[in-house]
Image 1 (cartoon, rainbow, N blue to C red):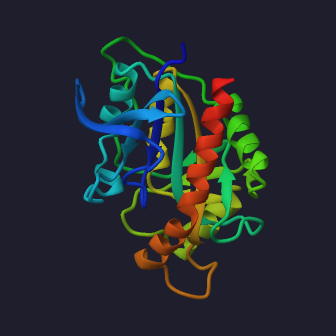
Image 2: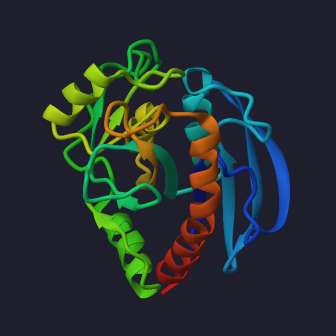
Image 3: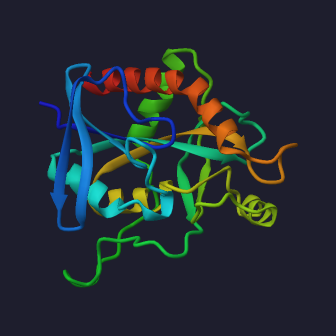
Length: 246
C-alpha cells in the first residue's frame, strides 16, 4: 500500500479542488504546530500544506519550515511534490511557464536551515541530488502526457524576502547559473532531504526577475499569473499521482 503523499504549495494555492473529503488538522511537532489538510487524491491519502496559511498571512521568512516537514514525516509521508511561484531568469521559460528544477543555491541569511542542531551529534547530508530524480521524472512525464510544455532542469535561487530581489542580485544569480528565484524553496528542500523524504518541485514563472522585465513587479500581477497557471499545475499533479500509483 502506498504511503501518504505530501503536497506543499504557496502563493495562490490555499485549497485544491481535486482533494476529496478535505479535513483540516493541526499537527503538534517538537518544532511547533503545522496545519495540514488531509484528503484523498486519486484514492491516495494526501496531506496538503499551504506554506503561507489559508489567508496568506505568513510571510516567507516566518514560515516554520521545520514544523511543516516534521509534520509530514510524523504523518507517514515519504514523497513530497512541491509547487513554487518564482521570478524567472531563464529566457527559455516565459511568464506562466513551468520548470522542474534539479538544483538550488541558498542566498537566504537568517533562517533555521537544518534539523541537525547537535542534539544527535554532527550530521552531514549529501545534497548532490536534492530534488529526487525519480519524482522529477514523474512530474515531467505527467506534463508530457498532458501535452503541457515544461522545462526539464534548472537551478532555484532561494532569497530571504519578503522583498523582491534587486537588479544586482538577479545579475549575480544569473552569473551563478540560477534560472528561477523564490523565497520558500529553501530551506524546505534541505529539511526534506535531511528527513529522508523524496522531494521534487515544479516552479511557475510568475514574473520576469528584477531588471529583466519592462515593468515593476507587483503582487497583483504575480497573483494573476498564478491564477491563470494553477489549473495546469493541478492537472500535472493529478497525472503525477496516477503515475505514482502504477
